[in-house]
Image (cartoon, rainbow, N blue to C red):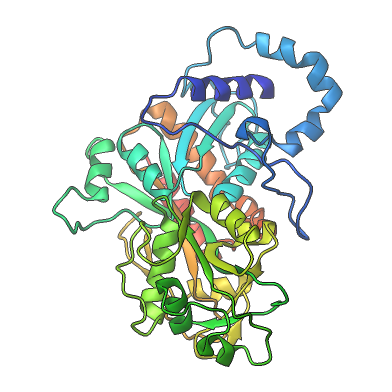
Length: 426
């Protein structure tokens, strides 16, 4: 069954509409890179990563001897997307059976490691559901969702409800895609954003908002600049130029980081926060590209989602918001989320984050990845699939799997709200 599911996933990407970006990754394969983490971003031939958990379960000998027979059993045609035949599997939510079929989603690279893990855990319970997630970036995900090319999108910022150029807003386009019904922003993954660096001999770096803004604006150009030296007394700071990297694709991580620089930078940041970068530096594609650029470049710095910084063994700056330097951790990120205010209404759970929080022990640079879904308007079989998978994603078990991957789980009050919103989808 699992082999058939992989065959369907293969055929889906082979036959996708030209509007949809080709899938580049599935699961991660590799040895643990940090304590408590089982992921690695080691590329394999063809830019495809496979699930080490699945390989371990099946076994390399079994794959070699049975793989052809298993795939041939799938038939020449892939199973129709969204098939709703019931199975005898145990549902991840109480009181129902697992559905059967395929969900396609696209968007945020920041949640890629998280959603891959959740898909793997979910498939242990619901083996007849295939969930394809294409990490193309938040902007691309929303465009594909609004074009009805995917069933839901992952975005590191909620749908825009205003327009600066008179064009249709993201929220209005999403409502059209949902057959005239509003789309929902469901916060699902808390991904702290690390200011990551690679400087020989610099094992600890402290930055504040104004200094970070000047670095990424290009006003501070060398590592031994007085502003950096003042925050890091006794540190060995080279006179070398600072190599800044940024996300070249439209990115919710970029938008959230720019919001922090604007809120905490004391006027040093000149750009308007958006998915497209407006500061200095050299662009690299997606989270993996930015992390790899810092890893391979001495005297460099960038912003990247926490799990990518850890996986690539990059230095992570402590942030001083006025109450002393704060190290990035699940706990310190959770304290920052506690300062967030509701920005949506009803089942729309968009949040307004306080990037300038001065709460003691709070790490202020966080993002929330939303799953953007139709409140109504999808076919009944797709709705059943979506509710089943998202219910597991928002469950205590699903969220608990994220801590070891360097994400912060949803606080219980928020998790309960998200679950209620998912159950209200019809």
